[in-house]
Length: 376
Image (cartoon, rainbow, N blue to C red; front, side):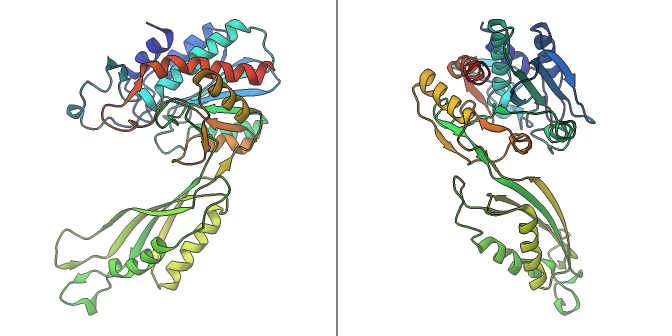
């Protein structure tokens, strides 16, 4: 059994549902320490954050990942236990196989191989892992990045192992992400009997015209290398369960994914102006998940593109689509950031899997990019 497969299996076997790391980072830290890495812990509350470095000074290349996973859902829906790594049909099955314990295993093996081949390499090779990527992302990489900014610790390049590929390993390279902004809106009404609406105030009826305006609006037509910004309502809740009661409030949860044509504060002001124009009485709680970022042409994009072409025979699509990742906290430190990982078709699903052939090729990809950045 190969090193990367054995480590991926060991990580999947640990049920690290966010924010519980379940011993994954201890396993990784022990291996990296044996390889000569300096290990530091930046834990916050229940969240574990591992920072391991080899070398000192110079340019810093960070391999960024997470050991937490989303809940597996109904276990009876899986063809095998989600926390018992299983190989069949040329794939490794288990929760986190693609998102992203396979990439974490590949990072570790690539790092071990790199320092064994280049023990006195220039620059610094680092691995940063958190157990808070799939959760609130408050006490993980966000806190570590804040600390590094305060302490003046640089990161020049960052490869995130998120599952970015669509149909073949390396066919897509993420070079940025949209920002994310969430809101919880509580529209206040007056509860009453449905037969006497004049004695009540229906918050659902009041909220609908404002929501319709927000949903119908074209927020922009896109931005260079970014798709258009999007407003989506993800949840609406109101009522007592009875069909003859006008509720006293209505709660709406929504989210923006926005490109660099906006800042979060601008979007907040636009929404609040709409709500005011419709005369709503409301409370609104905002959560700024992260601003958009873009890595322009530079050494990292060029190195990743060249390695993918040489090792996989592909010219990757380079875009900023998809959801978000912890890379949004590293980019503001001034780092060039890309996301490169396995096919993402099964992530967060029942029977999550990674192709064994992809898994075996990942360490060489990461190592070759590191060599181009730190050795040349």
